[in-house]
Length: 247
Image (cartoon, rainbow, N blue to C red):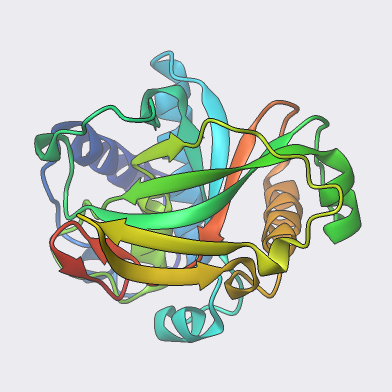
């Protein structure tokens, strides 16, 4: 049975409080075992509206569960998305306090910066590339505000798909002449290689992930605005600050 408005509003407030205080709460799917993906997105949207009311501004979007294996693990057949606010952007090189985070993981991603609005339905790779001013390297620092490891999609989605912080690289590169599928990535920690990847790890082409996001947002009457950025999905398995993670 779907959640009612009062239950969704209460969950959105609790998740927002958990995000702001870095204190975990009981998993959504433990509290409401029959919660649906649609319920989870409704909770996410209520959370977003609360943040907008408080004066925060949406500056970007994030995409998760791009790998088919991860989608199967969480019981969905498409990527999930979340919203990025101005308060989540961390300047390159600035240290991040772990006290602000709950179970943080790091993911290396290709970030798209738009020069034109992307509005679904009907967005495809060609339209994404035409609307893109360029790409940046990016780190997503994602978090889990629930007490237990998340194994069901509604937990991920309701928590704004783990949106927490993002670090953007300093050089914008036009996409003309670049095959985004072949862009390689090497992640190092203290000089040791801990992960590698390439753009093709994200739905075969990270631009396809952005197209999927634009079309999904159309279901909620939203679009990706000119000047916004999109972190398109991790090129490798997420890394805990102290080891590997299956997020």
